[in-house]
Image 1: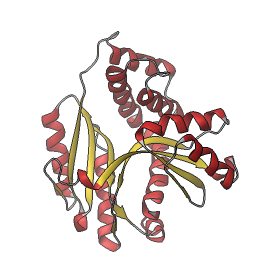
Image 2 (image 1 turned 180 degrees about the vertical axis):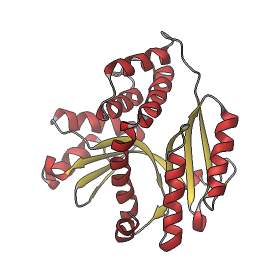
Image 3 (image 1 turned 120 degrees about the vertical axis):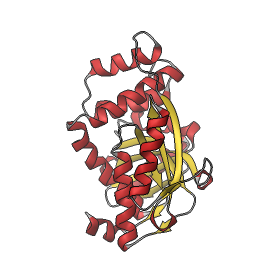
Amino acid sequence: MSGHSKWATTKRKKAIIDSKRGKLFTKYIREIIVAARDGGGDVGTNARLRTVVEKAKAINMPADNIKRAIQKGTGDLEGANYEEVVYEGYGPAGCAVIVEVLTDNKNRAAAEVRNIFTKNNGNMGEPGSVGWMFKKKGLISVPKAAMAEDDFMALVLDAGAEDMAVSDESYDVTTALEDFDKVQKALAAKGITATSAELTMLPSTTVKMTGKDAAGILRLMEALEDNDDVQNVYANFDIPEEEMDALG
């Protein structure tokens, strides 16, 4: 999964740029509104809300913006009614793609997502066409400098983590949905700050991609993520790390 690890690192760097022009602010505000609407406005009891609030704080979103978004979600302030929609499709070389959307206009969102697939050598599929290839998991990345590898592994496995992978710069911890919050709290109790912590969709199988196909799937991912309604994009590509580096 080296390609995915490299892609995750690339996305984190891109997030800094996106936050400067406000794009991530918009996406996180929508997610905060929906998380507060569905699970209440208390970050202490609403794990989804706590996760996105921490992500918002990491890109220096003002506390007032976060507070207003929570109030819109709980109904204390008036706000748009966002719907959660999932689209599925295929990219170059048959790569499976899942697109999570938060939108106040489903017809517009569907048309725009379909158009992005078409323009980037892909096509949108029917509901369920590729979703069976993915499982919802928690994914937490922590700098290797935080703790010795054996000690860190013992800590997260005792807290309920399913697996841990080691890259050049980080420990990448995978959890079941129900254990995601427990592992985060175990890390916090040790004073360990994660580079990222998110609920994600991990593929059960991957498609190795090189050359034009690799460049094509990355263009498709970028175009989808750049859409204002799109919150998250997942795909089952595996691009060798050296090729990721070459593609920039």
